[in-house]
Image (cartoon, rainbow, N blue to C red; front, side):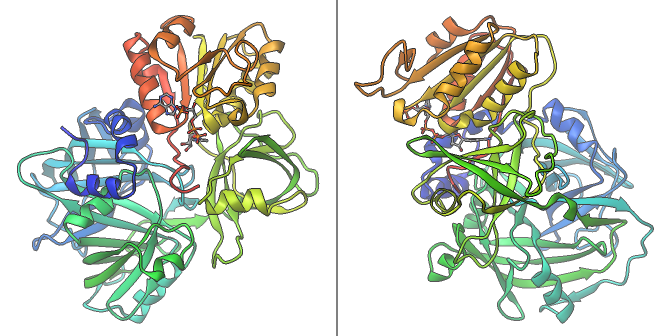
Length: 543
Ligand SMILES: NC(=O)C1=CN([C@@H]2O[C@H](COP(=O)(O)OP(=O)(O)OC[C@H]3O[C@@H](n4cnc5c(N)ncnc54)[C@H](OP(=O)(O)O)[C@@H]3O)[C@@H](O)[C@H]2O)C=CC1
C-alpha cells in the first residue's frame, strides 16, 4: 500500500518528485516511533496538535507540559500528560477514536518530527495516541528560539468571525505558523488522518488581505506534500500563530485554496505556490501558555568570504571567517550552516541551510554549493558573491554527525551530497580517530567530481582510509584506475565487494533515490538498519 494518499500523490506528481520519493518514503515514513524519536519527544515542553472540533473543522493548538510530559511507553504509543485548556476550540474534542496529528519541534536545534494516529484512550490530563505514521522533517525555515517556564494567568479568550486589530497585528508580525489539515478517504490507510505542520518565512511572510482572508507563500519542504495533499482533497484547515514573547495563541479555522501559478506567486522568490486562507472562526487567547520564548539573536552574525574556489563544473566553495579574524565557534562534522542571503529583488532575506564541507578543526568554515539553473540562492552565490562580501549566518546545527564507537565507518556520498561526509573524513583522519574508514563517492564523471584531489589526499595520508570512486557516465578522457575506480552506478555487488564487514556504521548522503537504493542494498547485505545514518535535506527542490 502507498505511504501516501491520493492528494499527496497528486501533488508529488505535479511537482515531478513522485517517482524519486516513493522508495525513500517507504523507508523513512514508519508505522512506529524509532528509538531516537521516542527520546526526542520526551525532551520537549510542547507539541503542536492538529484535530477537529464538533463540526469537523480542523484546529491547531499547542499541548504543553514540563519536559517528559510526552512519553512513549513503546514504539506504537505516545502518551501526553496534557489536555487542551478550557478556552481552546479543541477542549473536549481529543477523545478516543479521534484523529490526532502531532508535531514535535525544537526551535533551538531546528529538529522536528511528526507523528499521526488515532487517540486510543484518554483520562484527566492524559491522552494516549496509537501511532500510525511517523517521520522526521527537514530543518529549513525554523527560527531559533529558546523557551522558559512562567507562572501565567490566561487572559479571557476572544472569539470572532473576522480578524480584530489585535489579530491582524499578531499575524503581520509572525515568522512562523502551524497548520492543521487532514483527509480521511474510504476504508483504512495509515496516510489518512490529521497532520500538524510548520510554516516559516521572514517576519511578515503572512499577508492579511482583508478582514477574513490572509495568504502566505509555501516553499519546498521534504517533498512529501502531506499538507498540500490534504488541502487538495479537503480545503478545511486550522492555523495557529504563537505570540512567542507573551505566550499567547491565535487559532483560526477556515478553508484554504491553493494558488499554484498566478503572478502573485512570482512575487515571492523561491515559493512554489501561495496558500490563501478564508476565515470561518478565530480564537485569540492572550497569555494562554505557561511558556515564553526568546529569539536567539546571539546566533546571528556576519562572516566574510575569505576565498571562493571552483571545485568542479558546477560546484563552487566559499571559505568564511569572522571579519575580525576571531576564531569561529566549533561545530561537529556533518552539521550544516544556516545562512540568510540578501538577494536583490527579494523583499526579505532568503534562508538556506548548507552542509559544512570543512573539517571542524579548520580555521574557516567552508560551504560548497552546486549551481542549479533555477536555484535562486545557488545562482546568487555563484554569480554574485565574491571575496570580501559578508554573509549572515547562524550557529551550525544538525544531528547527522559521527557517533562514537569502535565499528569501522563507511561514508557513502553521491554528487554534492559528499559535503557533510568530507567534513566527517577530515574529522576522522585529522583527529586521529582509530577507526577504519571506507569512503565511497559516486559522481557522474570527471567534470562533476568535486574534491577529487582533496579526498585522495586524505586517503594517501592515512592507511586507515580506503577510497572508491564510481563514475556513472565516464567520459572517454576519464581514466579508469586513476580518476575513477569503476564505471556505472553503485550497486549491491560493488558494495558487497567494498564493505569491510557487516558490522559497520554507515553515513549516507546524496539524491533520495540513491540513498534509498543504497540503504536497501546495505540492509540486504546484512548491515543492521540502525547502523545506517542519513541526511535528507533536499536542496534539489529549493536550491
Ligand atoms: N546535507 C544534506 O542533506 C545534503 C544533501 N545533498 C543532496 O545530495 C544530492 C546530490 O545531488 P547531485 O550532486 O545533483 O547528484 P547527481 O544527480 O549529480 O548524482 C550523483 C551521482 O549519483 C548517482 N545516482 C543518482 N541516483 C542514483 C540511484 N538511484 N542509484 C545509484 N546511483 C544514483 C548519479 O548517477 P546518474 O548519473 O546515473 O544519475 C551520479 O553518479 C542532492 O539531492 C542534494 O539535495 C547535497 C548536499 C548536502
